[in-house]
Amino acid sequence: MGAHPVALAFVLALVSAFHGLFKWHDAPNPVPAWWNIDGHPIYFVPKWFGLTLLPVLIVLITYILHIFAYYDSKLKNLSGEDKHAVAHLISLPALFLFVLHNFILLDAFVSQSGDISLRFVVVNVALWLLIWAGYNFRHVPPNSSIGILTPWTVRSHHTWTRTHKHSAWILEIIGLALLISAFFVPTGVPLLVVTLVLWLGSYLYLVTYSLIVFGCGETHTRETTEPLLPEA
Image (cartoon, rainbow, N blue to C red; front, side, top):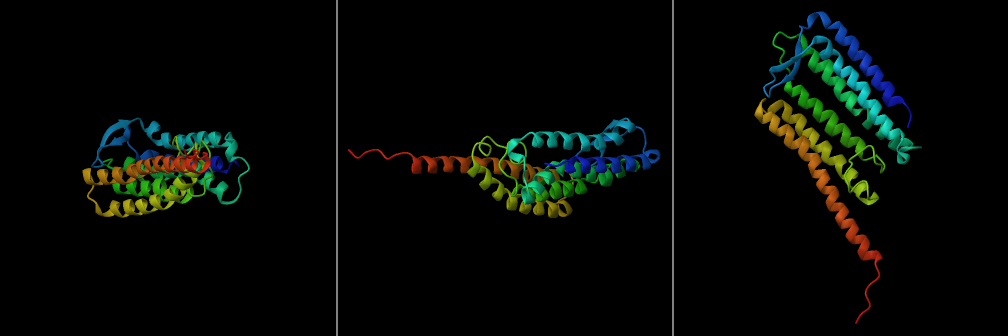
């Protein structure tokens, strides 16, 4: 597998930590930790916790994903696009949190209002959790650690391949739609609803799609492999 996803996570975490230190004197104590649907802060935490949480999570989440992939026998000895796709998906949460911390949260911490830019949060979701994820899913080989893991994709090579190839263009198109929506849909309830429907709805659709493909594949397998009953 290689250790480069974890190495990248350490670099991103260090950059985030130094950026947080640079903003330390400008940030109040406490800092916002949760916002309402209009982007106004409603919950606060001590400054040291708010400025260090995401850098720690960048390393921790990446390391956990890497460990799962490292001990998955189906992900050993990969090469080419398969290896790069798995590494990119392991690094994906780190990249998402890095952008969230450095370009969204720190600006909210040092602002007088503490408001967060919900449009930029949605853009971050669209870029990493939809478009970038979809681009890499198409190259992920069947395994039980990284990918669209459903009871049907992990049981059937055919279902895994069909679902991940289908997810590539589905997630990229929906991600582009969400990216555009972030700049035109009014913030608040409308933007929240659009984000949940497009983001979570796309993954719910892929879970359902894997079930349908699995069912059709199993039926086809039985029809082509089971001996025909003798005619009466």
